[in-house]
Amino acid sequence: MDNNLYSAIIPVYNSEKIVAETVRQTLKAFEQFDKKCEIVLINDGSKDKSWAAIKALAQKHPEVVAINLLKNYGQHTAVLCGCKYAKGDYLITLDDDLQNPPSEIIHLINKIHEGYDLVFAKFRTKKHKSYRKLGTKVINYLNEKVFNKPEDITLTNFRIFTRDVAQRIISHRTYHPYIPGLLLMYSSAIANVYTEHESRSVGQSNYSAYKIIKLVARLLFNYSSYPLKLLTSIGIIMALIGFMIGLFYMFKAFFVGTVVPGWTTLIVLLSFFNGFTIIMIGILGEYITRMMSQISTQQSYQIKEIAR
Image 1 (cartoon, rainbow, N blue to C red):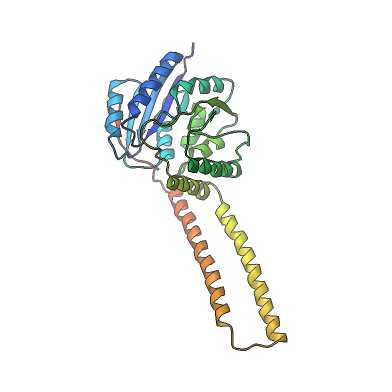
Image 2 (image 1 turned 120 degrees about the vertical axis):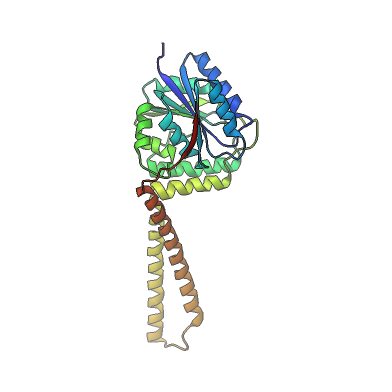
């Protein structure tokens, strides 16, 4: 008999038409598995009536807890909130749109009991749009460089991890959480297990190309120094080019002589170097802003209401 409690954490955003079915299938799956469960639903500032829908579910089912965030903070912040309020021995994260079929949860559970503390689902066939697949490749590359992700591990939002891992994530002080990176940082035994992945049956994906770009920026600016290293490399190259140009004009003036100083050359060089300086200041400003957020006591989210 499995006496563990499993917490299913589901961030909800503009999913009033499908979230009830997601909860129904999740409860049914755990009942079939003969596993004790709770479902933590986090309304991430939805613009539709998602909060009313999940609040009703919480009032109807004792296994369901509904949390209404003050505004939209993003999926990763919503998951962090869910980790804090989940009570399970094992925590499972899945999407609200049934692209991660609840019936596949059993594969995650069986795998983690083989001695792992973190298991990611690996989809046999991904049903995402092309721009999301491209974004996934970029983010996967950054995860390898920034968080030392093993090359043979595939990251997805459908995953299970232990209470110990969850506690380490919660204790990590950050205003801009990036859940896959934090999971990689605070886990030692990681694995994949194959699961199915379904197409979204109602509505459209909330992950736009813009949100993927924001996610890449969050990963880069909060967990790595790659932009600064890139700027430093470019700066060194530009300094060498400038030095060589200076030597060229110095020798030209010494051996050939000069006419009227080259106005065009001066303007081109000033525009080039000043433009680079402005870009560098902008990126440094982004780092400073995020550092101020990190060291402040401000929490990364605010809760408006909790329904049980």
